[in-house]
Amino acid sequence: MNIREIARLSGVSIATVSRVINTPQLVQEQTRARVEEAMRAAQYVPGRGGAHRGRRRAMLFLFNEADYN
Image (tube, rainbow, N blue to C red; front, side):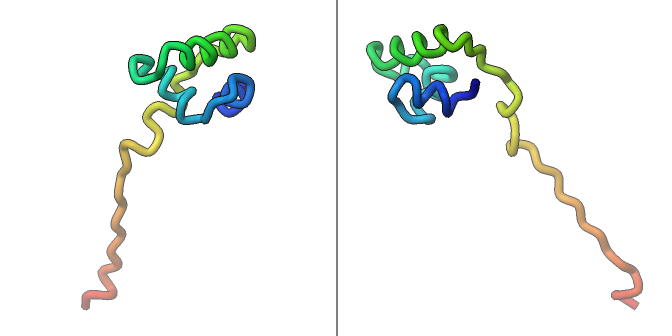
């Protein structure tokens, strides 16, 4: 089960499910209750797997000395 399926079950967007999980105070109480009920019914527990994906990026530069001689 993932947030796409929770969104489909509760009749809201994926973004709304994400808001319910991360910033519930931004979601209307009735909508939040509907999403939370779908999460309970599906026994969905939010994971932290993608929470930091894309936030830290390393850059790697490779130089070939032969190009500069």
